[in-house]
Amino acid sequence: MVWVRNVGLALAILVTMVALTLYSRYGGGEPYPDLSTEPLFSEEALETVLAFPEPFGNVAASADGRVFFTVHPESGPSGPVLYEVRDGEAVPYPTRELSSAHFVTALGLTIDQQNRLWVIDHGNHGFAGARLTAFDLSTAEIVHEVTFNNEVGEWASFLNDLSVSPDGRYVYIADVSFFGKNPALVVYDMESGDAWRVLEDHPSVIAQDWIIENPGKTMTFFGGLIALKPGVDGIVVDAAGDYVYYGAMTHDGLYRVPTSILHDRSLSSDVVAAAVERLGDKPLSDGLSIDVAGNVYITDVEHGGVARMAPDGSLQTLIASERVRWADGISYGGDGYYYFTDSAIPDQMLQSKAHIEAAAPYYLYRFKADIEGVPGR
Image (cartoon, rainbow, N blue to C red; front, side, top):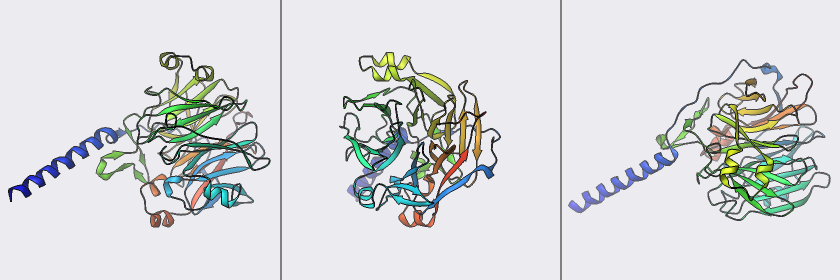
């Protein structure tokens, strides 16, 4: 019948329009050049800290040797999501009940110089309210908490990695904005309770048109209509509290901006943008850390390892291993080790529970990377 043909044609046109819209917004891209160098450390330097039945999220190591991690929310965990590693075992932190019930989609975490563990929960991409929680590690009590309004933790946002100023006043958060496509940095002033977004629409926080070619999977989905091209992800403040360093996952550059600029809300977006400095070419990356000499440690999501960018912008691969499926969060511990999670994103993103369970175990690693006797932090 004519009307059947017309309906079929209309549906075909609609499907084509939807596909083109998805592709134009989320698809496309080119392979990224391999910036790897010969690793400074052999694979034998890579130590397994913990094997776990669920995919890791991020990691935070304290000055006194304690190590904490999250279970990655993309894996759909149903139990505790925040843990401490104690005597080689994963123990829910601070209690099983709180770790299971308090969070919606906890991922990023860091430990500040005031011995507080900060956890950012993106609140199901902002729809359930992004929330920041701080625990006093000496008492395991919650000492600070704030839920961001949707002007800060926007709908379709993804507040992810975070770092805290040395004086403990400011928290700097990266909004990856997978779906919203509006990545930015978020600054939170704990004293005033104010939070604000900066560098929206700035090229340094926006994903470039690269496709992640991880050994486990080229990160495209639905026949190439959608590619995993996250915006600003890794973020860290230096030991002096002078600069915030950051990088978008699918971006070729590592950047920094003075904290004094980020703290001054009276400055125009043009002034803030003018203060951004590009440091050098980086791999497609996830987490960041920094040492007291200003070297930035960068997890490499395509090559299973960690690179280090010196203050002059030069890049050196520190360690790499085929065992690592997706180098994610990284943190320096007081024991002289860098800890990093293998979140195995190809084995959890858009995967069934059966697949995630079959791909277990998942791993938390560490390695030592002192440079001429100058440890990290």
